[in-house]
Length: 250
Length: 299
Ligand SMILES: Nc1ncnc2c1ncn2[C@@H]1O[C@H](COP(=O)(O)OP(=O)(O)O)[C@@H](O)[C@H]1O
Ligand SMILES: [Mg+2]
Image (cartoon, rainbow over all chains, first blue to last red; front, top):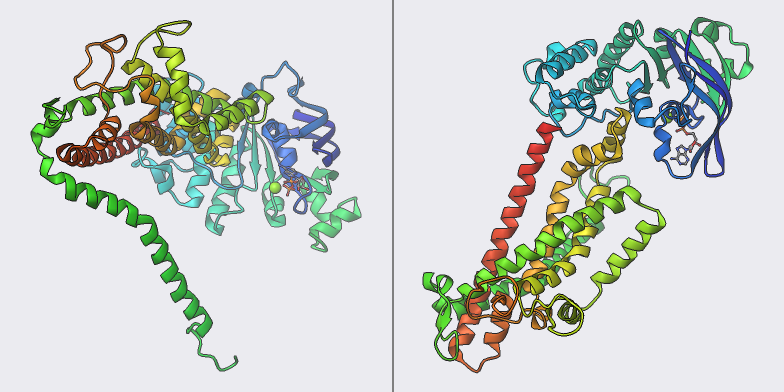
């Protein structure tokens, strides 16, 4: 049932180990929340799942990460193909300097899809999935920067959905947003998990408790424990987890 | 301190603000004064020669130029800019993209170092090299004589490192979040460069081309050995009929003639050159702005 699996994974920035011996599985059609104090390696972990760290100088890894059983760091998986299957939404909304339509169509165009009707259908479907269609359907040719922050982030989600990924990685997607936009994104994640494996990094304990099925707690580059969200929040097995979720540090 | 009025700046800060204002104004005047002086002098001394036939006829009379206009210089400068740009714009943009992509590889470092060294080569040295490569009629080289091709390509080589450097910097200024957003959707490096980085960097690249073109328009030293000057318009780009007039060279030559009329015409020609600079500046801005719009649509 695991979509991706990570075994004995180490990540280094130069000499510094940012992740130490992490082993976990990303379940399909569920939301996995990654929690832990700032700097514990959540973003590094997330970006290791779609090889976005390849662009970071001096970054290196050890261990095994697989997608449907294939080692994603092996020559059997081209990073470009990997990133189409494992989509990502960043902490700060980062739409392109293009129209709303072209932002969503971008991932399709780079795959060589040119037919207008195919693009239009896909863009509409993706915007609907991201719960943005009704707000933008009359202004698809406007700049993406004419949207509010919350709308921009949903546009980035739509953009990621358009390439039909299997896994969706979200790095604190609501941390820069107001409460109303945040709750819209949370609802959206609930809807999306029926189709995708979702991994979300969050700072917010309540958010993790509300939206996730599984929770993994990271501390100083190690994964302390992972389990059903309800159990992690009511009956954690590691005292460090309990300290963190009860707010005793971090 | 305690009963200081809220909302009013302390005396020190007010004095500082005023002082900074004066300094800014002083620097502004120091920076702009020479430009205004040049324009004013050129206008004052040259305006009597400015009329339509000045820009639409070739120089005649004795000494040459005492009658007629500067059409040879205008046509020649345009030809030189076109030849120089045809070499340096593609080569410079390509090199800039390469440096952006490859960043820190040894070859990229070497190219960057060479490009910086080239920026420092005196233009007269370029002229001598251009002579041996393009113009000389003996030994190795292309044997193109004093010609637009020889002069233009020499100027083009001077322009390459400028375009390269500015292109690379403009690409580096594109926020990483856009680049990563593109990669995260499964775009290749080339697609990211073409569809995201270049359109965002277009204004900066346009500035680079502009700097290069303006530099070319002002150069005379490299032309002395590769093109020199022609009082007519060329019938070919290479060979004995291939030399062109050139505004900067024309001004240089006229100023050195002991002739009041030619001095006046040199000033008028400077005004025309300034006008062309302004025209190209606006043109390049419009072009980069237009292509950015275009790219924004086609993805
Ligand atoms: N690009 C980088 N270069 C060097 N060190 C980095 C880089 N990104 C993150 N780190 C380090 O790796 C550790 C984990 O960071 P990160 O994954 O961003 O944590 P989190 O997302 O949990 O806040 C931190 O100590 C951070 O300083
Ligand atoms: Mg982070």
